[in-house]
Amino acid sequence: MAYLFNHRHFYEGLKEGKLLGLVCKSCGKYTVPAKICCAECGSTEIEAVQLSGKGKIKTYTVIRVAPEGFTPPYILAMVELEEGPWLMGNVEGCGTELSDAELIEKNVILGHKVHPPAVYSAGEVVSIAFFLE
Ligand SMILES: [Zn+2]
Image (cartoon, rainbow, N blue to C red; front, side, top):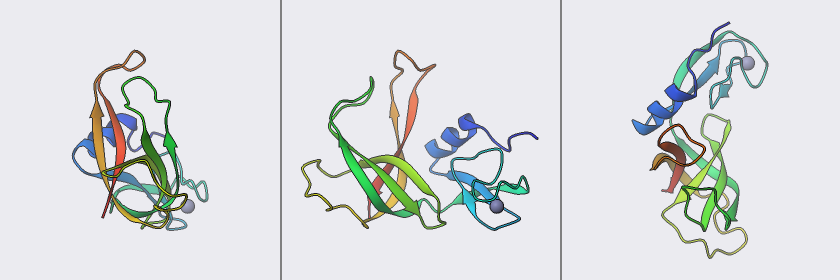
């Protein structure tokens, strides 16, 4: 069984504003980022699709100690996509001095951010970013 697409394809799509994932022909659920099978039922009857990139913040934290190439503080969130799966990414466009649950259930739209090459990367790094709607 071959991957329909790999992480390079995923991040190239992200740079073009596309959120690429899988939809399962057996159960109808979505998987993102792509895996070799459906994350819900394990079926390999899957096809590549473009997801909406829209979702709601379900939980988040403020990163104050960042890896090389990232500037702290920033917000790292788990977002429930419209299609169902949860995806982790940084929240851009708002400050980090927030009340405890200020961003919970806020609508976001997917974007991306390009970081310069770092010590442990093979080139530029593309990260998942979410912007408040
Ligand atoms: Zn499935």
